[in-house]
Image (tube, rainbow, N blue to C red; front, side, top):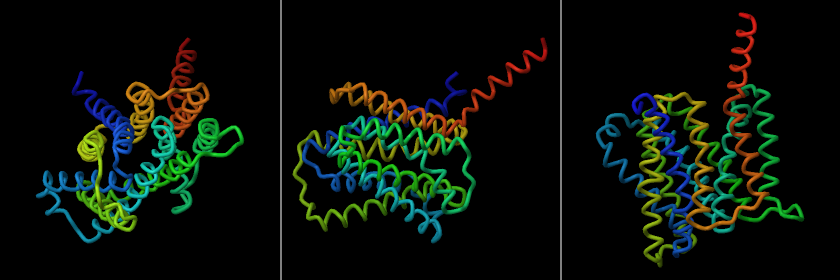
Length: 301
């Protein structure tokens, strides 16, 4: 039983770890660390751990082209996490989790713009539904949007570009090399910006240190490795759906651990965004299969 579904179980664990990462960021911020300090530390931990664990594999597969490609996705990784972490300082962890998840809907449009890849009707429909969900979840009574939600939406675009280019480059280069390069680039970028903002001095409580260590070890190193390993046994569509559960886990854990209050409007907005993700990734294929089965049954009768 376990062996048969080890890929699905592994990806579910990845989604859970990423969902718990929203709690780690919230705790780290409340304990005194700045968003830039959190980014620098978590990416540094990830780069060092992966570099040490897979030193031989990296040494045997690293190339100039892989470094350039890893640097590109590292740039988008930095942008995504930077805006996500800054956004967390001005919004709730639960809203941050669901707004981040709309990256799944954005990815097909990147392919359309950059490579003229055709859009299907499900991509357009899911995008419209996602925009509706974002409006319900984020817009205030006067139709304005708060700073944290706006920054998180930018973060979703960053993750969308990261996912898109990772999918392009992983077909050509070693995934471990790409991972260690992108973490290294994100570390350097975080540190440079941290120095520019004069945030080199760390003055944090123990809870904040524990939070960022969790982010570096679990949400960054283990989760990314687990995702890479498990996706070999699971289709891309199913993987995307399972990983989209990150937003659900993030919301549930935010309510349980951080005692966030979920309003009816937030629940409706989250459900609409999640349905957009499901439509975008499955193209309602499960309904088509059920209709075919029903037609075959009727024809037999």
